[in-house]
Image (cartoon, rainbow, N blue to C red; front, top):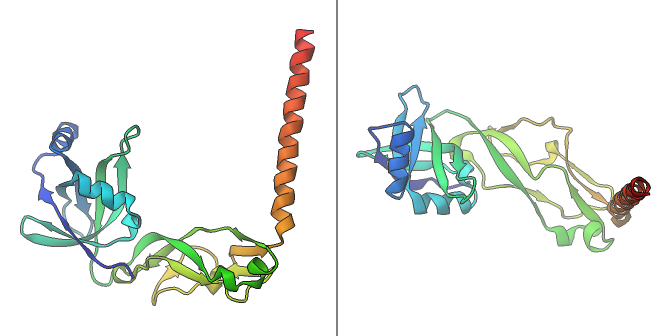
Amino acid sequence: MSAVKPLEAVARDRVGKGAARAVRRQGRVPAVIYGGNQSPQSISLDANQTHHLIYGGGFLTTVFEISVGGRKIRAIPRDYQLDPVKDFPLHVDFLRVTAGQSVAVEVPVHFVNQDAAPGLKQKSGTLNIVHHTVALEVSPDAIPDAIDVDLTGKDIGDTIHVSDLVLPAGASLALDASDTVATIVPPTILGAEAEAEAAAVAEAARAESAAEATKEG
């Protein structure tokens, strides 16, 4: 489970594009905390710290205890915007979290013990991953860093379904229980698909060259 992380913030009195630009010139990132049947709270965050948090991984699944104006507010990031050219953070949206509340988060799926899977280790099969992440409805206090899938004993042809995933207590998934998360396939299947795709691309290129030669002639 992800630990609650402290985060220092400063309250903002002014909002709007001009005010946001002024905040950014001060080396800070404008943000807002909303939800919880309360009025939105406009804040600003240290730009360098926010950059490290976003690019450090797990930002959107981390609950923060935000200190602002002598108060502490528990909230989870719902969205953030980045500069399209320089990739530095422009704005962050936080959602207040309260006891008994569930939140929707996108959690990564980690496949562990691949060396203990005969289909991968001994038979050189390929792990064909359908879902690298899953959408989870879960209590903020029980958000996992990842959902681990144990591949021990898995062989060629084995399939991991959504129903095989081990979830935190009280959590639910948006996917159907029968949906496929991953399969172990023979090494020739994906190789044949790649060869067929390469052949199709080469054939299209030859056809295009022939058409251009006909036009020039």
